[in-house]
Image 1 (cartoon, rainbow over the protein chains, first blue to last red):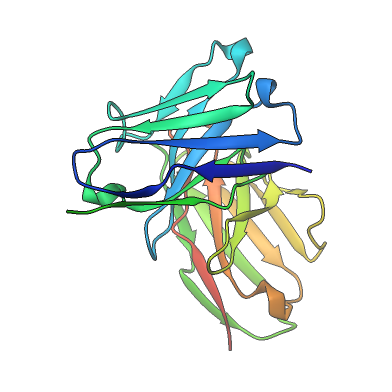
Image 2 (image 1 turned 180 degrees about the vertical axis):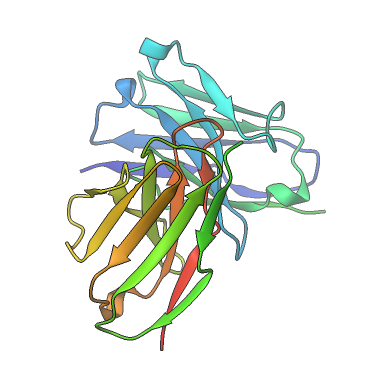
Length: 114
Length: 107
């Protein structure tokens, strides 16, 4: 059974940092491209970032709204993907989902507020 | 960036109705179009991938079609559990982009 479990969310002040983690199981993580997608309260879905596999040199792509502030990474030995979020803004407040597009985690809430 | 224009934003329908939801891309997305269903408080669930491929476990009343810039999700006979919000996603090129969503409500 495919499972994705996000952790690391919370309430933080504007300008601060937070690192999300997504633990996966039930599929061959090392050759799977992984994404982070977010959803602000009551709003639609926004794709945030993707990291490709080792065969694609772990290339990463980002939404313009997070480029330069967020970094996606992965640890194939642990079947985990991460999202390092720096210089957080109020508008980054959202539920963050880890996903391989066909399967999604349950999401983790990040609230940025003073 | 590719813009995804989804319509309608709201749809009111009855159990047993046939409904269609549309997504129009601002450029050719080569059929790299997924459809998702999301219920309140839950993660999205993929229904259709790459335009017309039914996700395992999804009822056959859901179907997808399209090509180029125009794509459609069809629910052939609405069931009570289908009342939810639906999103399209283009994954042809970066940044991936979602449609704005269609909220399907009971008439």
